[in-house]
Image (cartoon, rainbow, N blue to C red; front, side, top):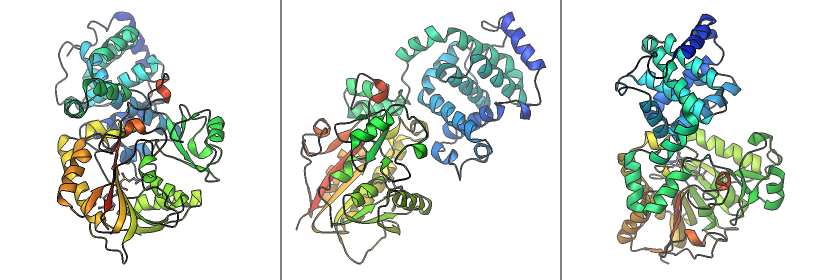
Length: 467
Ligand SMILES: C[S@@+](CC[C@H](N)C(=O)[O-])C[C@H]1O[C@@H](n2cnc3c(N)ncnc32)[C@H](O)[C@@H]1O
């Protein structure tokens, strides 16, 4: 490790930092410090304790340090963490280039402070000087990092000065994903596809909407486009989602274009009894209810079902809502059709949830694949003869998709594959495999504008119970 008077800690900069120090109020009063401390604390929770970011930043049940912030600071913390996680390896490499020797493995607080500072300097619209000064103040305020304040100053000022050349160079050399994930992608996809997926993960995704009617109208209202599948896509929202026109009237809901496909694979469902298993927060329940199905939405999570109920109320749609474990649930009557959108490793949603790669492991993929297999075994027992089931998830891993289905069919002679036809849903022909399975990746729907490109990675298969 170098100290602040090293390569990048030249005198002019040192003086500026000193002047900032002499003006300093107590740490608790420095504007902007609480949000940076929270970002560092939550970054540690994600990368060291493997805690999913969604829970930490939940508006009701989130981390107390996060909940203590006002709405603007919460937004800033979310933005810092998204950038810090999306570009984690790039940031690591840029920091390492500016150190004489690697940070000791136990210097985690120092590492988080540097990552939080670097994320702002490199990827956010925060003045470099503010990002550096707050990181230095943060380091000084913590006994574990106080003696490294000069190092923080030197590294971050160096980054700020050299970022124009350094970032493109490092982006070209570094992969922003853990090695296990890159290996699994390479096993499942060819080299070119793997590179495209990893590149797509570096771009902030657009927001997609499923609309009840007139997609062109909503695309025009939000400044977006209509995708070939009918979803409306917007690169930058003109306002927060609840403030957009049509929200209160329940004219649309936010749903990734890929997530909107599995429910459609059940075909015409008007008047059909459909069980939506693992339903919350209800994007697919809403599609089925809007298509006229008599939907029973089942999920174990009470809080997620509360969200489902609120979402349906806003959309003026109806479903029977059941809190139950699909592995144990025994309804009085079997269903004509079932959608099982199972809990998975979520590796298809890395663009939206960049923490996934840093909280999950290959063991989680295997564990979740085993759970999904048990859920699918339970679900098909709820299907009437001749009935259809669509099994889907948002994983990119064949262990949770293609491989799982192959093994399932070998063990269930009463079930048959009902191939998905390439032209079945407009715009999806290229996502249908020769075996009739649906597979999307973040590299799909690529356009000239990266901000309007991509979709979540999804897998879906349709099966039929022999009559
Ligand atoms: C991928 S999410 C579902 C997303 C939902 N289908 C949608 O479109 O909005 C998976 C859901 O499975 C639920 N879940 C997990 N294990 C379950 C089980 N054994 N029985 C019922 N629900 C379960 C979780 O609570 C979670 O809400």
